[in-house]
Length: 468
Image (cartoon, rainbow, N blue to C red):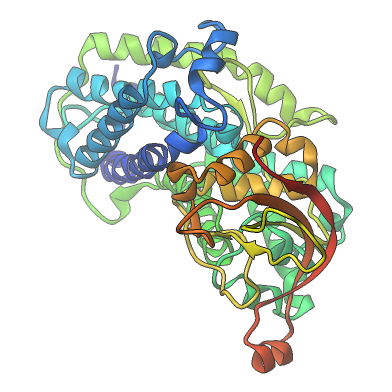
């Protein structure tokens, strides 16, 4: 079947696979370095307790069959090593079936982590990595030309990511329609980066231009992905440029980077390099790819209907395998930034003069004089959930109490998630959490005080608590 493959995309496939393996590597490293405190045997939301409640059919995972911290670490580090080898191009040195099995192993390992990750893994980019990673299984290696059907399915994923995000904005918050959301977004986004303060202070007319350009990129450009070349490549290039702008303006884990990766798969690389002679695909491979394409197109009905719905869902999976999902981001934009400040004291008897010491987080704002750091594509899961908790206590119901208990217990794994522990010798007697309103300082305030933020006390979030 001559229509089945297109050798012009051999370089696009190579770049896509290396980039996707890099995203996998970051995801597995994030899991390996954070899991003990979050979902380990003694974690805030332990996996063993979760799998006792949730059957295998609802959350397929290797950890449904067996769990121990050592086994989880083995799976996460194995995923990291396999990903690193793929970045180096190992899959192109083995037979086609071996490369497919390699990518499938990564997908199974990460699916197993996400499906027991609970609140900590409820982000849209987890499903996006799994959906993209599943398609990568069938993209082939240097033993065959890239299959056209999988290339089109990758564009379908990218279309839903961008178009879904564009629609959720137009439907969700009037500031997107008025072109004013960026008056607030850089200040109130979950985790600002080192340039976010400067982005916030750009002139308001430029902010309006940014929003208008975003609407064009997310609502019009994605349609061009399905047009002939070189228009589709130009559309992909526009998406890449927009995503790089977002990389500079904030920390969104690997969302921007996997979107860039998807866009690169739509570029016709024959414009810059002649394709080599590639073998014709074997019949069994053609049959498998056609069958998978039919399966995914059938499962695309609900995500496609979601795009057209007035009650559009954002970041939703329709099956436990995360095969075809709905995406979207920032359907609403906060006008005021609130942050949780966690403090402890060594004093066993509380009084008005009690000295409280503040815990420092790696990514989220705390110390007003500390310039925001760049962490993405690495994902600071606790810091992100602290942002959600400040929006509403409902987001913290399942894990915030256990988090505070572990601070009182001086749990080493939990403290490793933090940037600063004010009690290095012994855990505190009491801890508390308070809500503050944060705003960026002005240029004049920054020069005068060296502070990037100004904060004002709002209310108590958790009263002083101790272990009993």
